[in-house]
Image (cartoon, rainbow, N blue to C red; front, side, top):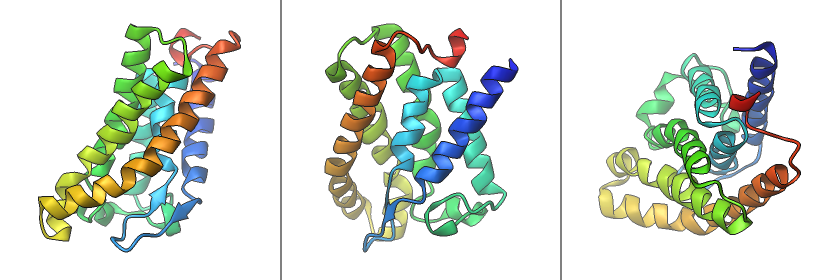
Length: 179
């Protein structure tokens, strides 16, 4: 890896962590956060490989106990809680988004929105069902809870689609994999 790539990945990791400062608590104990969409955005801006690696480093920061989640949380116990399986989506989402952008060559905000909604909002929420169902009393309760997150995540998908479209429309920025 080049120094420039590592630097951009480190700065993006900081952006993921800072986005955790903005959280809205919910009764289920799963906060509404920006981190899910910032992780997903990494697949577009950094590419599938570097976006996924950056999110993996974020997950490792959680694992070793750094307070990088909303409320200053961190530690291996997080992965055994109600939000544990959401992190599978956090890791895989940038890969699938980067791959979709690489293969589909989207041109409009709506193309980007579809990619972010499918592989960001929907995918991350669906990966959260196993741990949520275990801790909430069943799959029906977990699914109903997830449905409550979809409208907000749809708005976040529109925002990151707009950001991505604007960044690539400028023609000045390419993914890290092309640096």
